[in-house]
Each structure stands twice: as structure tokens, then as C-alpha cells.
Length: 271
Image (cartoon, rainbow, N blue to C red):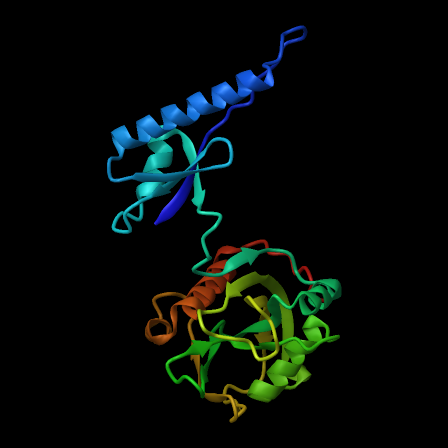
């Protein structure tokens, strides 16, 4: 596990007439603070290994994967801030809160980096979540999803995917809240046939569904579905998460945490 450690800086009040530090004095203070942080780190946490310097004052540090709580212990002991290595490739989804605009989708198509994709967290009248099974990879479960076509609005794409994948008409569903945006990098060796170079940008909506429990699936892409309880002790949900590949599993977990944790969500981006 590689992280960046940054000294915690308190605001310093400068009184009227007081001389401000020179640039050289500032650089000297930063270097001294970094040296002290390094000494304290190695003295209190000998399992840490300093591998480089980032910016003016940050240290790049390797920590053993066997101690996942080590960053929090370092923060508490040394009064520093910690964060991921900025040069590292993310291992899971990177989340944002803002709902997409048409301009965001158009820009994503122009950039050809992350393919814009809608995701529907379909919940029935009992609060259960719908997971669908990939025909191409039977071990993989996911929410209803699909790419946004060029020029298509996110909510138009959402309605189209619900209609295509589970044969649900607009009379049976309504987007109820925007869950979040998640960038997920493509796995090594996976190339997007549409020319997107980095991965997918998921725009995730919670959808209230009031149609029949039995669904008719898009046979070309899906081979099964299941209604699961929206909680992590549901045995069917846990069994599905165990077989789904890591990146998609983290996306499902992250989305579910947001749905369960938010109490005063704003339906931004949902009419």
C-alpha cells in the first residue's frame, strides 16, 4: 500500500506590522517540518518505508498491506494527513456527487476518455433491489446499465435501457433520486470498441419500480435476475458479490452504501 503523508498545518495569525517570513525562510521551515515528520514516522512506525518526496512537503511511503488500519494510526500519532499516491492507478470507483448535464455527456463523448453510462438502481415497492446477470459472464451481477449514445440525454438513456434490458415501460418506473457519478478505470487489456481510452463514467439513478415482479429480460445480454434486500446481510446479495469481479463489486457496494446512508438526499438531476 503506497500513500502520501502531508504535515497538518494550522492557520497562523499575522498581527499588524509583523514581518512576514521570506521565501527562503518558508522553504527552510518546510524542509525542517518534512525531516521531523520522516524521523517521527520511522521511529514510531518502523514497518513504514519512505520511497520518495512529492511536492514541497509530502512524503511518498510504502506500508504493509497486512495492516490496513496503519494510515489512520499514523494520522492520529503524528498529526498528519494521509492520502493515496497521486500517480497510482485507482483500484476502484472514484465517486462524485454532481448529477450530469447534457454538456457533461457531450464533453465525455468528445474527450473519448470515460464512456458515459447510465445505471438504474431499481427498487420495488418493498424496497428490494434488482440485480441482473450477464449472459457473457454468468458469475457477474450488476444493476441495469447501458451506454449513453451521442446526443442522448441521461434520463432518455435511462428509460431506453430499462425498456431494452427488462422490458419496462415508462408507466412502471420513475427516477426518484440521483445517487452519484463513479469513474471506473478499465481493466488491463480491455479495449473499448467505441474508442474510449480509460473506462466508464457511471451516472447512477435510483428508480422506483411499480411493475410486475416477474420480468422479461433482453436475451442477447442477460441470463437471469434477482430481487435482493437492500442490506448487506441478505444472503443472495452476498453470494452475488462474492462471484462478481472486484471492480463491479466495489461499484455495487459503493452505490448501495450511498442509498442506505443518505437521509436527506436531494433529487438533483431528476425531474
